[in-house]
Image (cartoon, rainbow, N blue to C red; front, side, top):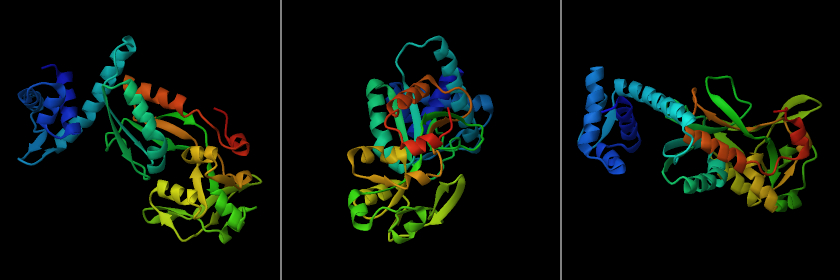
Length: 307
């Protein structure tokens, strides 16, 4: 069997968890998958998989080869796709995003993209923590910036900022704060990171960055829960613009303290080093076009640096 094809089957085994599942998906015999893995093991002189009656796991050597296999196959596909831009998109895409954005904005867009390209297989990992793209075998991550320097490649999708917001009913009952310092008198909804709740909100005035400590009767580790509490009128939240764009447009949420926004927090599509596969590049193009909707308030946009 061709070595690239054998590597593809190895990747499929990692994605689907068994030889029989790979065989069913590719409409081939299970023995063909077994032969491909055995061929790789024989060439390398090492076991790649530990098999039992109940589960299958990769050995240390298997994990190392799997990481290289993903990169090799991706670069191989990208090289051929650059010469042949026709044909249906197919294969897996593993993507990660925050809970709130992933559920409210990204999931419907992925559904629409997959409807256009039904031969794709999409896996969505939602987490409010930073996911290791290499360790988790992620093809694409949607992350807020500015981003730290790294070996990852990033493309700006949409400009935004973190905005103080609450439901109109909450503002009517408690009044809108005129200065960040007055947030001490409000019930603030806190996003709880593991061991470190985000209870110090950043603001900027007269080119000076400062933080205001906030508190309230609710905190959650899931950003979508915080947004839902805010929509229900239970308190004040600090949310990324793209997470609440639809709520702002519908009037479910209204912002305050826009003149004190700390600065731009833009949304990027991030992928590991090397050229992305044609399917990943197509998804990034699709997301960039789909997310180019309502922008943050004028005061926030003015604070953003030029592209």
